[in-house]
Image (cartoon, rainbow, N blue to C red; front, side, top):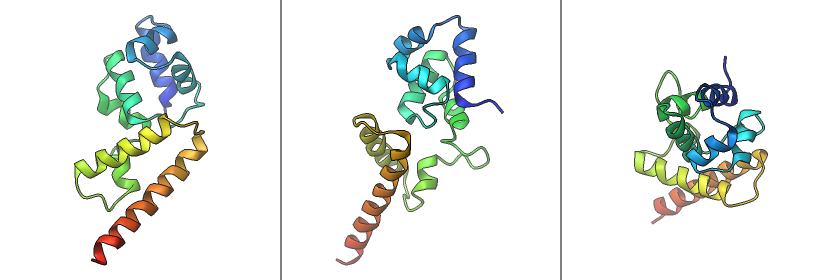
Length: 134
């Protein structure tokens, strides 16, 4: 099975692009491209993957599926599997934006991403409990 990094590298090389060119086309840093391709960055955010997919001319859904954001069998976004109480697409998008924004705008390492998801789960449980107590 091809890893996400291998898939991106193969597509980039098929276009004859350098990592820097892909980074420019996707509007991300070339360091981020490098880290994804070598497998150091295993869980890039959905917006980063979407930008890379657009730059490479790959359907976003395919890129998200390879990255594990969409389940092959169920077409269920990863965020919905992580937060099963989210009922609507709007709720899923909102939580994904919060998680991605925090991950992108802070100095988090890969292991910290799981902690961020745990914090979001606690916040959602607290908000649900608060709403039910009214």
